[in-house]
Length: 141
Image 1 (cartoon, helix red, strand yellow):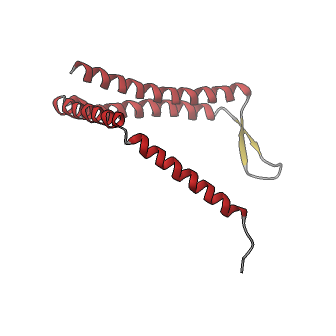
Image 2 (spheres, rainbow, N blue to C red):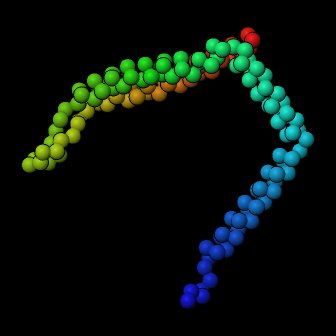
Image 3 (cartoon, rainbow, N blue to C red):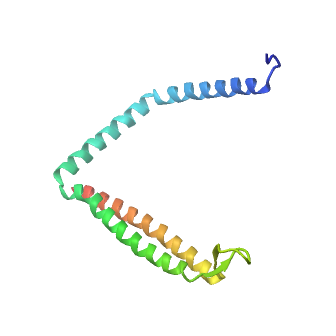
């Protein structure tokens, strides 16, 4: 039998009491009338957005257009990345082994890092562009 007192039991009770206190405070804050009014405004915005989407059929096509643009850009940049990776030198891991690995110069490493940055930047830019178009169309509606 394990009868010795463990300090982890006390930590568990402290963490549990802290989470219980946090939950009580969160329920108190969320039950205030200001929060209920904000939820009501958010529901009104969602209803207006649904009306806008139902009246503007082109908004239903926006995810497909956005996905097509993203895939096209991503494939193009991924091809450039693969072409840049092939510029590395192949070296054996050990003298008498068949296994090899790629070794990149400083310029090649910088190019790879830049291409990865451009990939992430274009993905974020396409997301921002898509959100801007949706906001502009809904504002014009």
